[in-house]
Image (tube, one colour):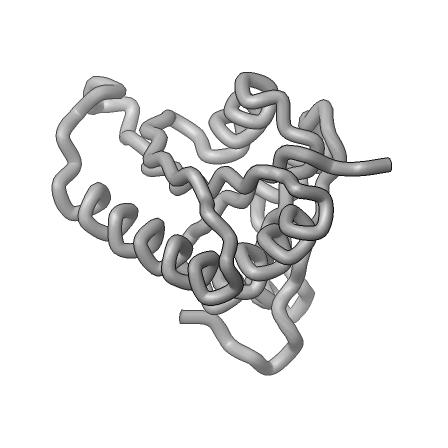
Length: 145
């Protein structure tokens, strides 16, 4: 089974570089395409298309970093900044719209109340994505940025 389209949401953690590298490595072997996205969550008190300068700047920096990572292994990626009320549904909608075969998600190793916690985005995507989902959790003790 060959996978042709990969969606990689980035969020600013150290694990982002690994997930972009992984997606590019697989895509290169299958002659596939990699889409890297960053979702800006817009507060309900603001219009969905509000100009959020600081968030846009951060998104552009992260996507430029993803492009550089991909470039080092000879892979071209398509990047996009999305604005949405919630990250999980935005990622699933993007996967559907682009017809991707696999979503490759990075996951920081974080504890909440003493137990490993995946947050809300990854479980949402695992429950709702119509395609395969690969979760790449960072190594324990690696820390997050």
